Amino acid sequence: MKYVDEYRDPKLIGAVAAEIARIADPARTYRIMEVCGGHTHAIYRYGLADVLPKNIEFVHGPGCPVCVLPTGRVDDGLAIAEHPNVILACFGDMMRVPGTKGTPLEHKARGADIRMVYSPLDALRLAKENPSRHVCFFAIGFETTAPSTALTLLKAKTENVRNFSVFCNHVVVIPPMRAIVDAPEMQIDAFIGPGHVSTVIGTKPYEFIASEYHKPVVVSGFEPLDLMESVLMVLRQLAAGEAKVENQYRRIVADDGNAAALSAMEQTMQLRPHFEWRGLGSIPLSALSIRPEFSAWDAEVQFEVPGVRVADPSAARCGDVLKGVLSPPQCALFGKECTPERPVGALMVSSEGACAAHYRYVHAGQAVEA
Amino acid sequence: MCLAIPAKIVEFPDGDKTIAVAEVSGVRRRVNVDLLRAGGIEIGDWVLLHVGFAMSKISEEQAVEQMEILTMLDEMTPAMEEVRGYEFAEP
Image (cartoon, rainbow over all chains, first blue to last red; front, side):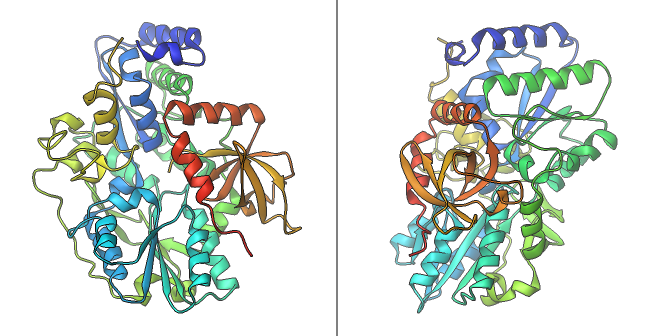
């Protein structure tokens, strides 16, 4: 394998791979979903699927925030940007996500004032520097980034910055995992739990997957050895007929998570009754909105947004790829109409999206065996 | 967005422990360390950054390891762009 030489501990990786091959039952298949987009990127980059026996398959989960954001929400954010006095601030990943009438970058080229920021605090600073304008921050992300938005809202309220709002698209990781284990077509045997999301929420929220659904969950780090060890931990549980939550990333993730981060989210945000996910449909209690106490900073209260559900282009199979039903090249648009340079679907936009990772490391040949 | 950036805390410019100056590969920027205050945060500590906020305290060895992960994933350039882009320093 080309990349084995680059691993920090090639001998250890080899030993873990050999142990996985020894205990894997050749009479069955294993479908292991990595939930986090960072893991998806790492699995492709390190070519880990090639190191594992053929009957062990990584199924790429819904953990890339721009990938799961439905087109309708992109349109809503861009509708806010069309107000003449508004500056819309978003992360770089968002700039290339297609809405119905183009990406935020294309809207910017047509005259909308859309700016890229690296932190929600940068958006708040923009508001303070532009008192005659309104700055709306297009907030996306799982529990890794939601606390940052929460602290920014608290700061905006404390400092009474009134020309600032947040268009909140934060999502939470547990409900889509439940939707996935509930979906009969999914047939997932185990989960590799997200690393950095778990630093915030801890490992206890995953317990129901083990207790109710009898499927192992192993929270994992991002090194190749971490991911291989996590696969081994999953296989050991399955071989023993066990299902529990294990923490392979103990050096970073505390079982109780980060209380200050959870408290900031609790103070400023609440669960939405429903939120639409690209590919997964509407999932109850799966996203956060801003609490009424902070409605002065809630873009959905301050602005009218269309709120229209927009279907993906019919030829694009983003939803099926996101659910792990199809692999990226099984979509007819993959590598043809839809490329990282000109994405049709959101999974091609971010390096954490399964299609972009597959394109870069498999389709473009960067991860072929030496 | 899932991948964190390792940084070393080098200064608390405001006297309190909400904002710190953090250094990543020689680049110094203000970051928010509010979420780590309860557990204690000192000059010389290493942290993982997400969108301008320190989310976890780590060891120096873990910081080096995280740098290697970013390098292997070709994410060092965007990570440094992100750090350079933090602009929320209070005047």
